[in-house]
Length: 197
Image (cartoon, rainbow, N blue to C red; front, side):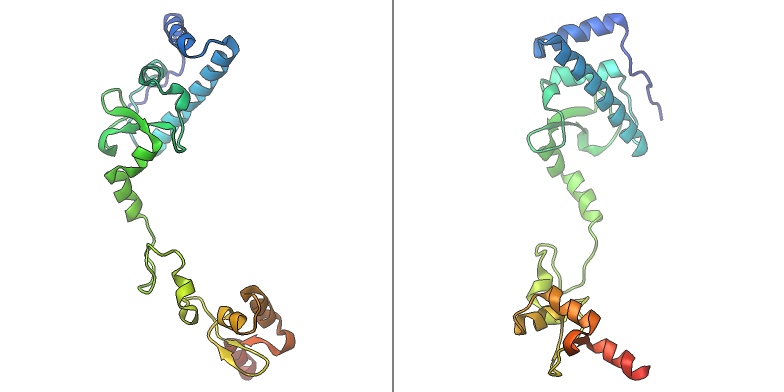
């Protein structure tokens, strides 16, 4: 894989870039700060490309001209409303002929990006659904990590959350009482351990 290492500009290239940037940013100190930020951004993007094992065919001059010509050099970023350099179909090298500058939100909505993200989603138990992030709240008595709770009256609840609702307490306070044995509260599986001891 070929990586062009030049992150520097020749004097002629610098003069050309200076002319282009002057049209965008008039203040000299702001222009100098922008060039420092852009050089860091170039090096970061090139390094990220290398870490992801994606070929990088831009030198600093080509990368900078690509961004300036897009008209979005001051809106670079990954947040909503900002622009990113995206490869066509998320394949091939980062090069002038295989990239475009698009909104970050558009890049996240491309089918190949969604497919990659979907492949990394951790599978959940059958009684949970991907669209409902609070599925565990629907069936508090059947939570995959729920432990049965025994209150001082001897009533067994399927979880600390159910016991908390019945006793007008928080789930955390019931769990704390069970861990410490306060007032006769305990987990049902702790009862078995006590009997075996």
